[in-house]
Each structure stands twice: as structure tokens, then as C-alpha cells.
Length: 397
Ligand code: FEO
Figure 1 (cartoon, protein in one colour):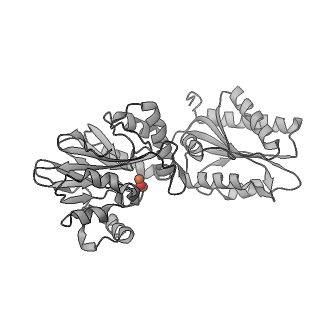
Figure 2 (cartoon, protein in one colour):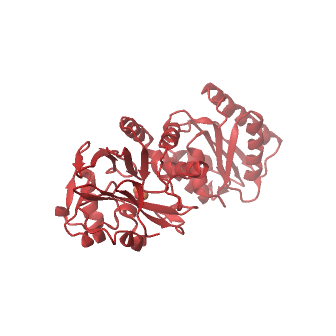
Figure 3 (tube, rainbow, N blue to C red):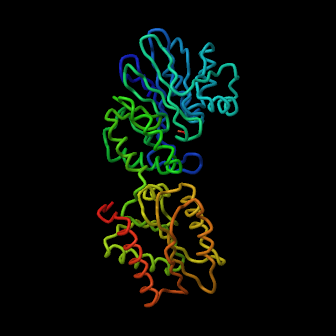
């Protein structure tokens, strides 16, 4: 697509749609592709480009700028290359333009993109830039997703440009959200993978932007929110400290013992009114696991023993959960082994970031037997009681 699409008079979306990208940062699965949204604002006196696009889609950006004779400023809300990577090329096209960024953004733009220091102008939190008949206000919102991130508010049109904040990885020709179910899941996946570790800072950022009247939220991934309450309400839920009555079980099984334990526990929890999500780590989309970690009160890790430790796929998932810092309150382990195991101790050492109570794990030698199933029933009782103590059982997830 190479046409500018208008949001409001003289405010345009400059979209680059990445239909086929399937991995971000060589880590994050993108089942639905993604988009990189830049925005162009033509004020009566100055023209501003908000962010750029990933250099892989350079042609999409440059073709949309073909008819634009002048750009005075490029605002970099975030220095990551999927938004800032084309800044040097845009500066070549508009050599008089300056790059506007936050105080922490300047060094990143210089370091990562080799933009000459004198081309970069720092704006402070709350500073305004007049474009003539339009005014941009810059609002520092750190850690959405790096420490330098900021958003900008176009006062006359009541549009908040948020870059990664509120984004969703979806490749779509829709300019605005049309399928709320699809966008909700994609935005939640995005929150889980990018924002969740900084949940407490995001709360402060949410408070900050709540002071602004918003007609639209325009992120730099996925469609624009012309009903901002939809995504604001979703974020309020995701950043809250209260988990839901949900257990998530990431697991793997080599010869069926762990699988049998998992299936027994799923039934036992379900009978007790606890919702369960299970993920076989041999085949799962790790993003789906991340989504369920946003809400779960309890994580139960299921693993066989490989050379006395947990299976390597389980190690990966546990370390990822530790990195994402979900709000879960309880963790347990169900493990099987052939002749010896330190899997439980090793898993416990991998989760220093999780502020959780460990519920007595269940360790089984060989295939689970009657007594082992009783232990799993006890674990289900314990989890169910803990959830009741949290007063979350009414929230059926
Ligand atoms: Fe979309 Fe943090 O980059």
C-alpha cells in the first residue's frame, strides 16, 4: 500500500504492513504478522513525521513520502529499529530536518543509527512543539518498551501517538480496529511479551495519560483505536495486581508419565472450579503461554527429568516466565524421574523474579500410581483453597 491514509485533516497514517514476518527480536512469535505505523502531520507552518518503519520495508515508507516536499521534524518516540531504523534515510531525503526525542533517546539514536549528534534535539517531559495550527505535547512514558520511550499528544485533534504502547502485532489493511476479539488477543500477547515485566511503571504511565481527553490512540503496531476505552480498559485489567482463578501448566512429557500427571491435575482442578490452561512445550506457541500468564494466579510446571534436571524446553519456559514477571501468586512443580532428580530444586532457583509462594510439589518415580494421584488431588485442593483465600474464585477467567 503506498497511499497516505487520513485520520483527521492533515494527519495521516504512513503504514508499512509486514504480512510475512513471523518472529520479532528473534524471540517473539508473530502468528499474524505485524505493521509499523508512522504518522505524518502537516501543520500550517511545520510538517512532522512521527517515527519511521522497519528498514526491511523501506520502500513502503519512501513511496508514501514521495509527494511530501518537506519534513521539518522526525519525532522518535522509541529508538528500537522497527520505528527508528529509517531515520537516516529520511534525513537523507530531508537534510534540513531535525530528530526530536527524549533525553534518554538521544544517545540511543546516535549509538544505534549513527545519526550525527547535532541532528538530534531533546524535548523534555511535557514540552510542546507548535506546528502552526496544531500542537504536539511530548509525554515521557518510560519502559514501553525501552527506558527512553515517550508518547505525543496532538492537542487540537485529541490523538495520542503511542508507538509500542497499546500496540498489537497484526498485519491488516484495517486502519481502525474492526475485529475487537482479534485485536484484544494480539494486544494482550503484545502486552505479555513486551510490557508485562514493567507492569508497575506502566501503571504510572496509564495514570499520566488518563489526564488527556482522547479521540484516538494511534500506536505504531496494529490498527488505530478510534474507541480508546477498549484498549485502556483492557490495560487496566492486565496491569491490576489481582490475578484470576486460573492455573497455567506449561509442561513436557517424554514417555507419558508427566502427561498422565498433568491430565489428572487438569481434571482435579476443573472439578474444583479452577480454570486451567495447559501448554505442551514440545509444540506450543510460546506467545499463547505468555498471554495466559497475564491473568493466572498459579503456575504449575510439569517436567520429566533429563540428566537430573528439568527438560531443556521446560528450562526455557521457566526462564521466560521469570523474565516476564507475571502477577501469579503461587507456583508448584509436578515432575517425574527414572532414577534420580534435582528438577524441582533447579526450577525453584530459576524464578527469583517471581514473588510467589511455592506449593508443595509432586515428584513421581516412573509412571504415576494410586498414591501419586492422591498427591495430585491434594495439590488441586491446596491450589483451590489458596485461590479462595485470594477471593478470586468468582472471577472465572
Ligand atoms: Fe516496536 Fe520496541 O519496538
